[in-house]
Image 1: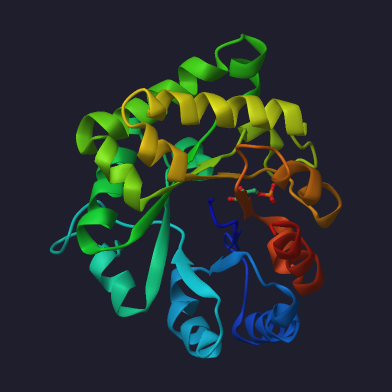
Image 2: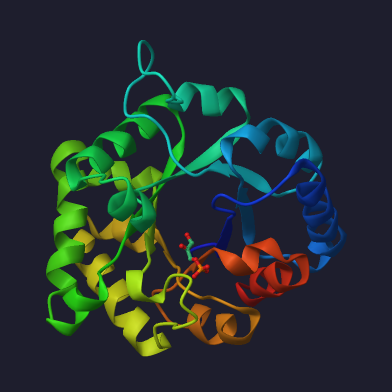
Amino acid sequence: MRRPFVAGNWKMNGSVAGNKALLDGIKAGLAAVTMTEVAVCPPFVYLRDVAQQLQGTAVVLGAQNLSEQSAGAYTGEISAAMRLDLACRYVIVGHSERRAIYGESDALVAKKFAAARKAGLIPILCVGELLEEREAGTTEQVIARQLDAVLTLEGIAAFAQAVVAYEPVWAIGTGKTASPDQAQAVHAFIRNKLAAQDATISDKLRILYGGSVKASNAVELFGMADIDGGLIGGAALQAEEFLAICRAGA
Ligand code: 13P
């Protein structure tokens, strides 16, 4: 049995006061979230503050990105170890916004995945196809290529301490959600691909869906056999909505 997992990716949103209000709202409703593991992934500058506010709660902390390097002359970068210092457990790697806007290649994403694991962080590896790739019928090839980059560098064993998030790029922030059947088909593809290398690891792996998840569609999505929770963008910025999504994970 895979424990449901809901992670809020705040992206480049937040402020000291706004975060406090959001976290107060989330904390107030957490008692009703019994089964689901819950994480929030604020921007780097707020990690310490958010960690303090989450003390004593079951909500864990994640970061949105990391450097593939461990230390040294890399101006503007932040290492995996620094995130651990800030009490992070998870780190998102390969988000489509990093891939598309900041030009992160499959190979770089794989290095970031490796750097996270080496430092003891659990990577949340995002994979997903563009609209034109879906329309061209190449969704599975794209996902396979993104997974293969990590498998080649790190091997299947690495997935015992990782999470995968399927985020169809055309569904992110667009209000267009993949239908539960569309999402399930890709989740099953991911699980089967990894099962070909190690069925036990694949069976235990949590595969999250991300892309316009809302309280109104979460129950149906999370009810699919291979969807183990969600990576939530916009709806993670509203306490009530986020809590309702977390409850849908159970
Ligand atoms: P939205 O939920 O805003 O579509 O964002 C999804 C996402 O990119 C989470 O990482």
